[in-house]
Amino acid sequence: MQILIILPDKHSIALPDDAMFSFHGHGDNYRLLFVNQTAQSEFHISDYGYRVPGRYYLSDFNNGELNDVLFMLFDSCHSAEINNTYGNWLTMSRSKGVDNAMGFQEDISNNKSIYWNNKFWYYCNQYNVYISGAATLATRESLLYCPPIGQYGGVDSWALNGSWLTELKPARYGT
Image (cartoon, rainbow, N blue to C red):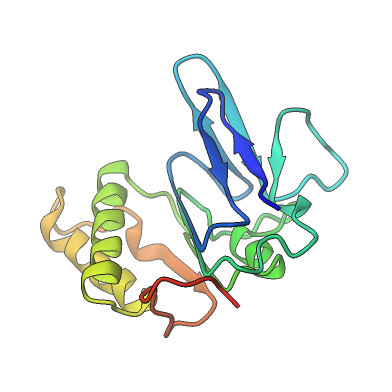
């Protein structure tokens, strides 16, 4: 079974049949924002009794739909921070069957985040570095090469829930 999140611009995100999910954009410690010129859609960790029509909830995946997901990256501000009401993206992802989830604990600047994201995937794909190693290398390069030089812009606040020794190649589903 494949569940799609339909966004306002008619694009969709397929989660359960994918081995990896990567989000880069606006968010915080309980929601991810998908915005286009005319509308906004939100993906929340959970509703905890307060369900809003038109919003999507990670907590709704209750039947093992995410068991095959090897890795989820939440490249947005405070995505690894615990929300006292709704929980945490990384912990909720893992509880739904995702093998590894990564996010950030602080505000992250957009240009540093874009640079970090590109370098992270570069190291995972080109050198088959462990996801923890790819995050460390991407963080170091963001400090040294992405303006403003000498500042992390929050990308040093990444956190990983899962195995630090996971490689993303060869391509495969989670267990």
